[in-house]
Length: 178
Image 1 (cartoon, helix red, strand yellow):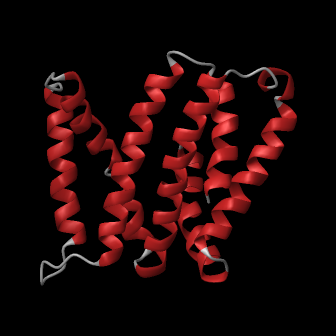
Image 2 (image 1 turned 180 degrees about the horizontal axis):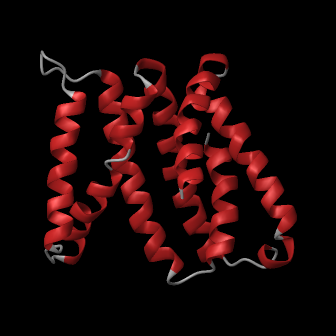
């Protein structure tokens, strides 16, 4: 778990460095198309027979993921990696809030407390003495929202279609849309 956290945090720094050298669209396209070709080779037998529903769901998810990654890359051009990492992590609070609207059910008390604490932390960490919000912060929050939508839709899709096929073809569409 610690190694995953370190790798995830380091990816923000690597992406910030990469977007200084490559245009965000190019970086995301290369990254995801390479990932698609590698995973397609590894899982060829499992993905070669795919239905239209899976391709459509993969296209939707790929479009959302392309938006998430491109907005994130542009946000990293204008804000610090640590701020971007914190703001995009608010996805964990946005998902339950969106689920309230979808399911019309209130979340558990723990989720409400976690959401409130996250929003308070967001305000303390992000708002400077002038209580101003930068363009990079707005891009990060839009990214977090789109990522939350992606997570919710992914949960819906994997209940109906093959999750491996969805994941592999989503990589293709993310690269394609980028």
